[in-house]
Length: 252
Image 1 (cartoon, rainbow, N blue to C red):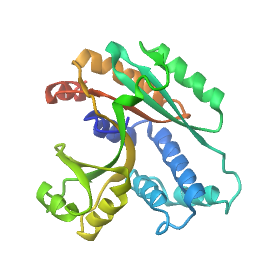
Image 2 (cartoon, rainbow, N blue to C red):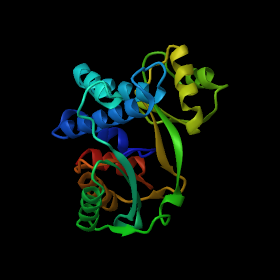
Image 3 (cartoon, rainbow, N blue to C red):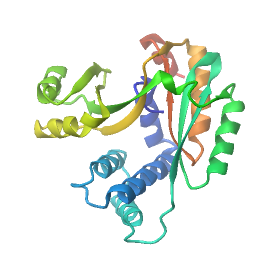
Image 4 (spheres, rainbow, N blue to C red):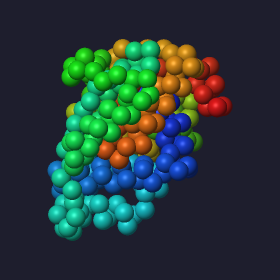
């Protein structure tokens, strides 16, 4: 799951170390292929590809996999699929809003996978537009808390390049920008010697809903089922949790 969710960081860490690692790698490779196809293989001239590769490296995706994905996507090697992006909308347990982003070469297979995962996990599909109005596209940059990296140092680095918010999430800072400003913000951070973990354009909810631990477990089960599909690239939701609920879930 992506976006401003407090659960996202924990989910990513678990994906890197457990059996979901292979699926994470497959999604990262798909992102790299698509970015190379749309903007070419030059990282300096293709910021979307640069960020996709950066995210792959931060997730320990082997360099050989990255290079092969770039070559397939840019047409230097054969074997690239023609992926299209499809968005599905739905509701999870207790009416939590869900946006499901698929990157697929088979629309029928993607639709079937999404519908099965949603209906089997206490969710319902929704008509286009009934959920998406609760979300806005934002640039989301994650910066790990390291020596010398503070909220003040981040703000000083990006003050003139269009940051909307900097949030302290304990182990990392979450920087939110307009999508058109994300590359400038990421570049400003690098210029100030501040490393970042990832930079993505995501759907962030403008209408977050606080949930209890029981509801959070049910929503996360639904999201896990969706993310098990090779067709599903990202899942966004408007559920949020108090620190107490998050701590309870992390101890499960």
